[in-house]
Length: 276
Image (tube, rainbow, N blue to C red; front, top):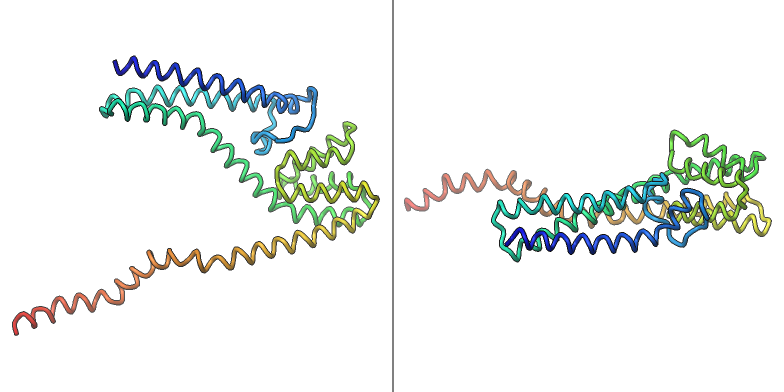
């Protein structure tokens, strides 16, 4: 009876996951076309696999395949475990559903971690990239050549920002307009600072202002922003240290300072008071 209900639940979950996968697959077809170069148009929202730096044409198919595979595997592994530990029927359904949900949503969590790590590396390498851009532009290079040179120079130190600038150069070589390539950079990376940089360069290119001066002003603005963020994080350190100090350091300090006195009182004073 338990096995029959488990199989019924498995069929229902598989059907639901199949319908959900079909809907998500249809919505992500535009991303696959973009990666493969077929009917390419910048989407309004970039799939996390692109934001994580995974640009294999089969990346989305592999992601959904992993999600379905882990869902089935976790569900099948959970069935004998619930029988072995004699889980009740009501709790067994919840455990099986939780195992299937873990297999389905676990890859999304891992992908989100990759996206956050890549965003962190992009923000860390952007100040150096801006400085190099300013130097290259002020030395007489055009913006396209400057971005190419920055991509080469930062290939080892900051490979993420180097890869993004390299993709911009590839798009420009294939005939895309500079504004479109910069918008694609902003959409593809998903980093707010890169979006601001792309907007500054697009505006400077559109209105004919000095790109070198625009880059220098934006570099000063970003340095001020980063300094303020660092000051904000430094101001929060005192508050964040209250709980570790209170729960970890103060008990140990109390034991070290007051412990010998308490032991001496219990060993000498209490017996003396009992004898009186």
